[in-house]
Amino acid sequence: MAKQKKNDLALLGGRKAFTAKTKPHNPIGLKEQISAYKVLRSGVLSKFLGTWSQDFYGGPKVQEFEKLATEVFHTKHAISVNSWTSGLIAAVGAVGVEPGDEVIVTPWSMSASIAAVLHWGGIPVFADIEPDEFNIDPNKVRELITVRTKAILVADIFGKSAKLEELMKLASQHGIKVISDTAQAPGSTSQGRFSGTLAHIGGISLNYHKHIHTGEGGILFTDDDELAFRMKLIRNHAESIVSGAQVEDISNLVGFNFRLGELEAAIGISQLEKLNKIIRVKQGLANELTRELTGLQGLILPKIDLNLENVYYVYPILIDKKIIKSSRAAIVRALRAEGVPGLSEGYQNLHLLPVFQQQRAFGKKGFPWNQATGSLYNYSKGICPVAETYHDELFIGFGITGLALKKKHIAQVGAAFRKVWENLEYLAEEGK
Image 1 (cartoon, one colour):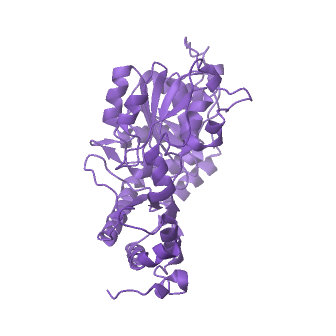
Image 2 (tube, one colour):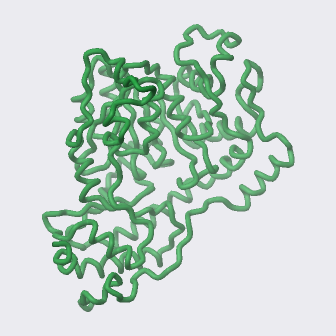
Image 3 (cartoon, helix red, strand yellow):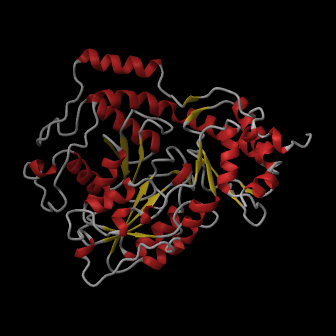
């Protein structure tokens, strides 16, 4: 390929490398439309009742959806909820987190992961991510376990499971629970088992920009009968149910309306049937992108681990600053000018949010931190150096699942990267 001159960069008025039109990922088709129409015709859009009755567990489509989910994911219990945030709140409540209890979490996740902990008065304690991955580092988790630790809340980021086997062993040694937030990795596997089913409680999101969706929604997984029942109670006005259900331990059983509707459940049934096909498409696109980008000096591409399947919610890239002197900001700006869609510059560091910097979540007196007598919590910048450096300087994400892409689109993404890489020296000079 002939060497491009700097004035060929779209940033400087040259022709864009990516010229194709893209649309958002949309897995909803005719089958979902027909399923939703049948529910509408039935007039039964929900059948949940917040009483101890035959309708406590919801309507026929909700129950059919949950049964199918147990079969698809090979888990004993599947509990549908109206959002994955609701699911996380139910999970944290079910494992018995109380005010002042510590829950070890990752700084790289959606804020719902830590909000669910705060909701019950738990105190998030942040463990850094692994240097060669983007998930929580089991070694850092080990260092942070104390007598106050009640649970570990793990997020499977960008489509790949965290190291659940190691984390479950740690949990067993210390008598604590593990909750797996597999919102971004539905259908991925770890050691041959579905991510989200290896922890005491796990589950997936059905939000509109995931691999499959029902608009909003989520599914909780567990093989534990007691945890399953407590999550169902929390989902559906537990405080009104405990007497009829003859529940003795009513701690954390102040319930909510976290119930999924019949419409969403009907759509979800069709979506579950498509999950495997959608995953294979996204994996094929990711493999194609790896082929396009292999050989570009200073780009660190996703690590392949045969024991941890990646379903590529996001295709993660790192810049090697030992090789590349251009700033990430300059590179991303040039790629966007070339027309590349779906790029994210950095991710996030939850420990730097105002709620942690001020250590005040509910009310004005520092709850829940004021429940941890004698404990001081450090959320300053520097406690998660890998996550912080990746966010500030090195990480670029390409949203494979968020876009309806084909092989031709990936070829143009590759062309854009190569064009920018041929001009890195110029971009580095411009950044000085």
